[in-house]
Length: 331
Image (cartoon, rainbow, N blue to C red; front, top):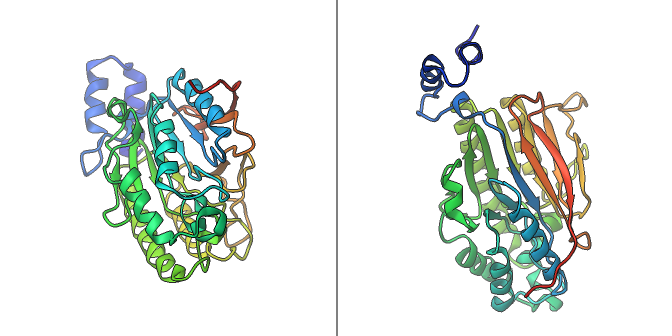
């Protein structure tokens, strides 16, 4: 029996409150001192994305946030697209959407979406340089380690978010023994060949993503993480031949599922279709059973959010629920 199973059996046999059980929890630490089994406690978090798409959607997002505020969530993840590609990519619009997201009573982690910057070169979006708009977003949303909403609430059970130095929208954190990792992978072919200069930006971001995911995987393995949650915006597709712009990510995902054999969630948005499935196949065409994909609702389904509960006693570790609310008027 390995150390982890021995500790599990010891805590179960002695009861959660016994002195020896407490000592066993102290033993259950990884080489870097991070509690491993000791923090395998149930919790829940929320998932939203691809909203608001228009000003009229802001009322529905306010209702979603109010509904999530009433739930005992540890955090909320917005996987990106806080605007439609038909809206101008102005500083004023970004600031208004940020103020709305700041209503969250829970720490809210925001990822970038393609509408938020790569599509800003389009005429309806204002004809901006997407790289300049990405720089503006980084300054507004990701210039500090903290989440939106109530970041101090994240300190109750979660680790402080850590951002990648040159790509700060890439972020990771832990809640107990579950590791969360966010990567900058967006819709519209991940921004590849979408505007002048996009290829060099894409290649740089691909390299940053690989380094961030590799380092995050090493941390999860050293900490004996019980599960891993990976969040991106774009739907990478799960064809045998990856769609343009996603081949690098899909290779990294295949490497990840081979190295980390505990349950993995892949969260994304982009195609606006709520679903929970196991779409990844290995080299032999077999379903990768320990990876579950969850795609959130998106516009026009702006009155629904996804509640994801972690339970260490469940074989799959996670239970997923679709939540629906009635819209309210923004005061």
